[in-house]
Length: 367
Ligand code: KG4
Ligand code: ZN
Image 1 (cartoon, rainbow, N blue to C red):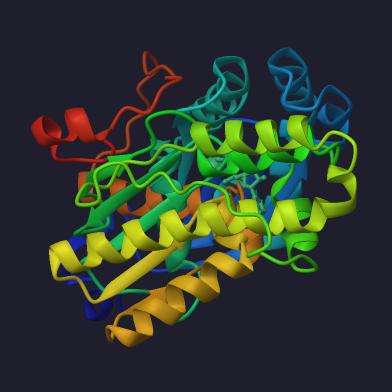
Image 2: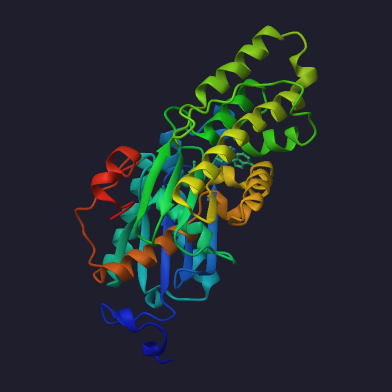
């Protein structure tokens, strides 16, 4: 194939032709061991996710030490399966992208060290990828995908932020949660209602059978012109409701779920629409585990349509943690950087590196 016809800007990268470039992505930041092979940042050749949910369920949340041990057990079989499903040998990988942070340190270290070793041993280019930037790239793994610039609402179990995304490697964080993440609020309310962990899908399914207007929970918009979030007050309001109706709240559990879900969805929808309007942006992407929520998708689509804004969201299986999104983000960083030497000193990080407060100086979401 004539590479020059398709990609004149970066024809060859460390001696490899960049057309049909297969990136092995690895993700282990929390409770999913995942590996994927993605071609040219868009085509998924394989995506394997080994979930630890069943192991953590009895504890009502992720137990970090158990998560690390399970990643150790699963990393080799998961990567092997990803290569096998993609129909390639480890020598046919063109680059390795692995989640560097944020996440649980012990969990991150398993995938990160494996990815570095794999790249070093196979002589492949390597890059550490920011997990949040990976989520943003999940929107490029299905069709149609947005052109730049676009507003991304990233709502997951660990993070809730709004970004103004101007290229594959540059995004500005406009706002973020000041306390709980949206997914975390779903998980905690589910636990309060005795519905188990994780709570997002359980609450959403239950909410579909309830009346969202029967019980009104507070919406915390904070500064209506800013893009920060707060979900801890809503969580406390649900807790108070359960306490004051301890005799009969179980009869209204579907209405509680529906009322709570709508309170979250109202705030997320308002803020993402406000961000699009403030930036004069005609495209919105919904990413992260909470983006699988149908009510959220419907509400954002309904409001966006009125303003002539297009909404993009990956299929539900790509909203949650996966390695295809890491491979997609890694592809763009590797090709932009033009040097993929394995930095053996590179280390993982637990907290979000690119936030509203420090983004102004760096201007970049990930390095
Ligand atoms: O992106 P993700 O898999 O992991 C993190 O990076 O945190 O997101 C997981 C979160 C969990 O809190 C889960 O309850 C939530 O996404 N979630 C949902 C739904 N499906 C998963 N929240 C609301 N509605 C859903 N359908
Ligand atoms: Zn995630």
